[in-house]
Image 1 (tube, one colour):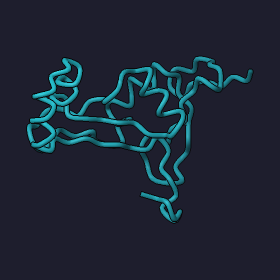
Image 2 (spheres, one colour):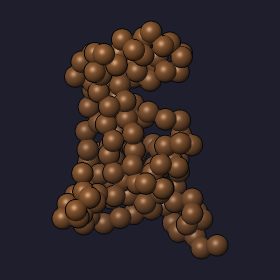
Image 3 (cartoon, helix red, strand yellow):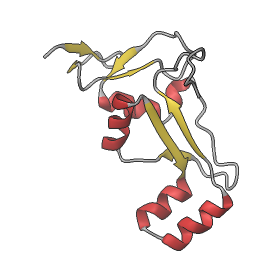
Image 4 (cartoon, helix red, strand yellow):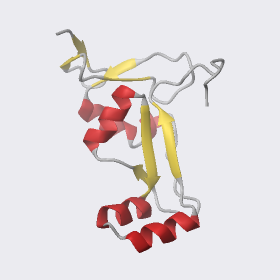
Length: 126
C-alpha cells in the first residue's frame, strides 16, 4: 500500500485515505492530498479560497450537510462537498418532518462544491 504526505500537517497516510483537492481554486490549479482531519478542518472554511456563505433566506451559516464519514466518502469518490443551511440540517437531525417541509418551501440554501474543479470545456460540465 502506497503512502502520501498530507499537504498541511505532513503526516504520512495511506494513499486511499487521502483526499485530493485543489482547495476550491480554478480548473488546472495544483491538486494536493490531505489527511481526513486536515481536510475536514479546512473544508468548512473553504480552504480560505472560497467563501462558504450564509443562507440568503435566514442568514444561518451553511454547514457540512453530512457527517464526517459521509463527507469524506463523497470527497474521495465523486469529488464533491455538500453544504446546507444550518436550520435545515438541525431539522433533519431532529427528524422534524414539519420543520423540514416548512424550510423546504422557504427554499433555504444548499451548495455543492467540487474538491477538484472539473474542466469547463468538458461536455458534461455543470
